[in-house]
Length: 248
Image 1 (cartoon, rainbow, N blue to C red):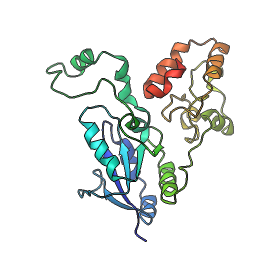
Image 2 (cartoon, rainbow, N blue to C red):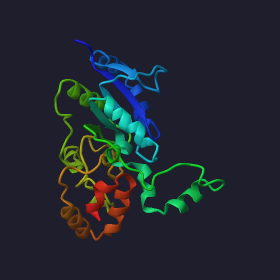
Image 3 (tube, rainbow, N blue to C red):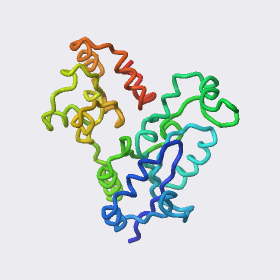
């Protein structure tokens, strides 16, 4: 039985998620026992017109991206959105609340209309059907390996559907709300082992919302600690686009 062919593609992103995968080292070698990587610009010069699984990093931010994305979708049996940019729009989506022409003049003052861009930076699902995703900025490489193995075996990707707060409690962290900080942990997907809050930071939502997030509970928490809901909206806009409108 031949191994499924996997191709990596990049759109608007820093490509940090792909670099994280290359840093897997021995685990990447183990993964190659069950898949055959046929295209991966960060690691090889070869390209392939044939592949079974397409792993896409980066957001859909240019009109010309659509043709390429549709071609990838037509070829692949499975499309995986890799990282926050591909999954929920990512940092690129910060521009979505700004006027396009004004933004282009700020970023490219010498020739603002030389560069192509959409009205909004969108997740890959804004252009084509996505079958699975690996959340995070950057992705957790062990989770990436687990998701790929599950897909190859025909299983559910196996992502957690509970919030980061659960992992915070398991790590016996003091809730950051008790410290007067604002955190998206109550509504954001776990799976990162609460790495940011465990390191003295807060959750800013790079893994996206859990299914059916309890937005009212998030608002109640903000009110309980006398915090302005605008702080949550600002945090949501850091990573999430259309998926997070309910928070507002």
